[in-house]
Length: 303
Image (cartoon, rainbow, N blue to C red; front, side, top):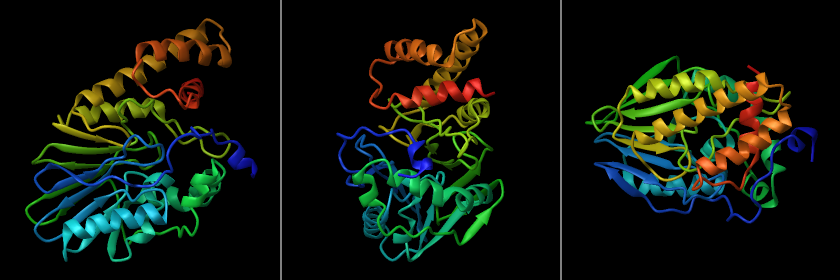
């Protein structure tokens, strides 16, 4: 394992293999989600059907997951042209993109720049997480988009408008949301999770681009969309309450870190104290990856 992989937190090694395995569930007219089943490193994947074209949101960890997502999308879309977009570049969301050989791939420019800079390093990091993850990453071809945009882009799929937006640094440099204004349905990627602790990819010196302060601001902006349905990066679908819970967690973590640091507590003490407090406050959240709280603390300490 190289030094970069060694710097990456570990996974729950008893978890099922990180392969897309769900069947599509229709959550609005012509909008489907392939649920993650709460399997680590499997995202919720969207398929949005218009009269003229279809958009797939996220592609899974590697070629096998990408192939499953592509097959399901093709079954749903028929002979419609396919588009693929990613909520962000991280491997479990985008390293299955090569399977979409017949799709037009769209990123925002910041996301693409980050992908070009970091994708090879993240591939090496994730290969070091476990043999199951390394197996899913065999044969990965890092796939560039066909189209990039700045700020925002609207897709008319035929009777269905989809708004792609980027918000500045938060979970990553180029987090993208996908919003259907008529249905008021929002795909958030890892800006929001459901009963998982938020992921702060803070791995100095390899990646320190997470911006926890702006993440709070982004969530506040998403609340302004007043979505009826929220598809998180991981975990079950929900409503605007998922945004409120995420905002509460991030602001609670920020204020607690600031207070304990002002008291002269060490980083280790802060992590230990807050882990106990947060587990008590969110008893139904998955706690198998304690590094998520630790990196959140480190992120706020670095502000």
